[in-house]
Amino acid sequence: MYVRKEALLSSQIEGTQATLEDILDPNVEESANVDIAEVVNYIKATEYATDKLNDLPLCNRLIKKTHAVLMAGVRGQKKAAGEFRTSQNWIGGQGSTIKNAIFIPPAAEDVLGCMSDLEKYINLNDETDPLIKAGLAHYQFETIHPFLDGNGRIGRLLITLYLIKAKVLSTPALYISNFLKRNRIEYYDRMGEVRSKGNYEQWIAFFLRALSESARVAIITTEKLSDLHDENIEMLSTIPRNQNLLLLFAYLEQHPIIEIPKTANALGIVYNTVAKAVDTLAEKGILTSNEKSDNAGKTTRSRKYSYTKYLDILREGT
Image (tube, rainbow, N blue to C red):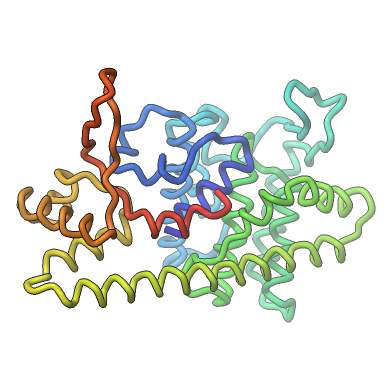
């Protein structure tokens, strides 16, 4: 769930229009919405990269392959997906040109050398605190801007990947995109301060504040989810022959919006058994059925159900 929430928030920073419900919809893979597809790709890119970290160092090869997953089949896929740029790019408002750009990254012929230096720095076994090093690596990646599209999302993912590689994190459960989204102008201004004045200290102070607040929020959120889990497990334990209920409940904590047919297929249980379990969880207040009104004003029951209290906890900041 944290990976999915981060995918949404990191994409929202870039202007992607999608909600948590959109990306948790059981039919999300069939969605034709480009914004939702971009978030789904971010989830796939995160899962791909964290898995590959078991076999590969945090290197340019991995960064490029992760970028290819991020851009597959969405806006920007034709902008050299999975390859460092060979033309000049720039950063500015919509419709800006290189003449009035806010920032112009290094020339195309320098990108490979810059990224090679960054790769060496990331994997250098020195005494720099890993949190500070993560902040410097993120700043440098964004300054190089090695891709024609997707730099912001890959750069923020790089933070998590580095902290996992440095054994600061054991799982990808700390993300700063919520903080950066709420402090977007300061985020860009502080990177600009380094570029214009070489003031790294103010950037690192901002970055560490982002990590600190994000860690605090992650702990609070985890505790809320854990308490909700324990409360529901205790309630379900009082129900006789509750194996299917417990199985469905465990599934809900990974898929908090469900449809009965797909859930039955995923769990390998017949439709009627799942439907009965869904009804029981709805009676207990764990699941909420999504209801719609037709043109005649009659309420019709849809086939989707939501683990509402769980979603309410995750929805914060999105």
